[in-house]
Image 1 (spheres, rainbow, N blue to C red):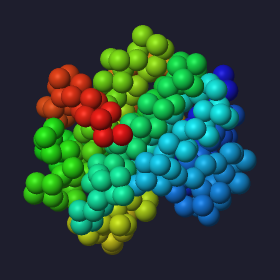
Image 2: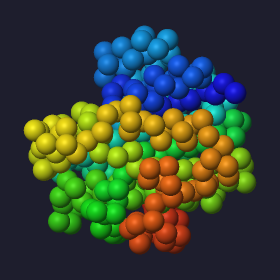
Image 3: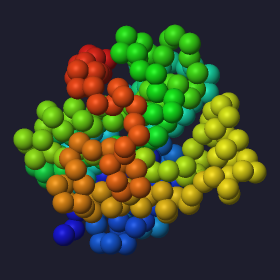
Image 4: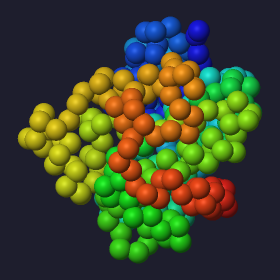
Length: 272
């Protein structure tokens, strides 16, 4: 079955690798990225349509959603893959801490706005999360903007935990409309990830240890492709968080807090 698949953060890394594989498998892939040259390059390479949006600007996310709704009345898969770890604490023009907005608020808004097309396609909504949610997440629902004791890795861990909580709450709220939500950790992938941060992760991803601890973008994209082409309830569990194609067993305890997931959703709605 040919699917219409929207992938954000598709100009590089696992997003680009997944776009290549899914296009090769015969799907209609739509690539979304921030860099015009890189996004256009991937789209041209695989013969796909492309759209540009910087998730640090919610107005661009709204424009992206409007354009996608007009062109794709039925979407089979939305892969919310864009994101990253930042450096010093920075606020966006929308008044949100950059890590929180780019990794959580922007995909939350995009998904919400695309709901008509997602419902029409009985879509799978995939969140690229991270094991950083377990290692670095110290979630404070009253400090979503990371104003207290900011550190790049903590802000990133909290944002990835927000991805997982969003997945679970999206499944709870929209599962009866045919929506399936799922999240996954791609592994430590050798990409441009962490290139904008001053955190030690930059040395891991771009230093001499890179070859020892990272996997290729193609390998990292394997789970995204598996979920995009899979069937809910057969291939994967709706609302689940996956590592290495299995439900993760070692997780941050907050991940399974249904009340926290609901409150995060409500506060995210208010912020966008």
